[in-house]
Amino acid sequence: TGAPVGQLHLYQTSNDPYIYIQRGSGDTTATIGGIFWRNSTNNLALIDAASTDINDGDLRFYTMGAGTLSEQMRIANNGEIGMGLTDPESYGANGNGSQGLVVQAPSGSYSAITIRSGYNGAGSLNFADGSGSAAERRNGFIDCDHINQRLNIGIGGTSVARFTANGFHPNPSDSAAAN
Image 1: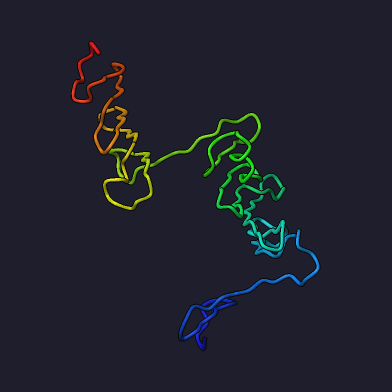
Image 2: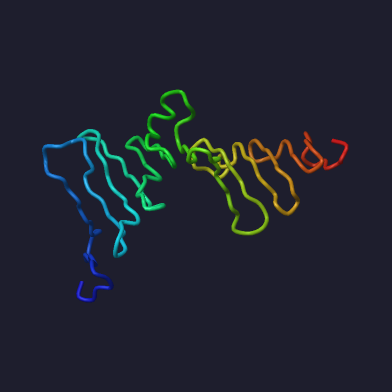
């Protein structure tokens, strides 16, 4: 481009411009290349691509903590995502859990996934079958209603049970303390 806005600025009038990082032939089980973020002294973060086979590649994300650059997240070649572990593709496949997203805290810490709402009403964990329709997006769900202090559990888009400060309510419309 004739008017770059940074040290490296790619522009192409048609199609999308790409940057290629390529390793020469001869080594099929190596780090192919990456991008470092660095201050005047240290590499502070890194995204790189690693290959275990000529036809496979993982994307790895590193951050600096206490002077050490450590892998924090990996997208494996089979689509598994691991946070806090470097082998998400083998975690679910070895009977340790379901395949998908695996979160593992550092030793001595608890693992957690926080769902933070954009407003102070509710956050949801929805289970879908993948058809893409509006109805399937809430085949199963857990809603946390922050305002009313309740946890709703639902199937097929409808709440079927609720937990409140008063305990379990098998009928979500009944909020009686006796339940």
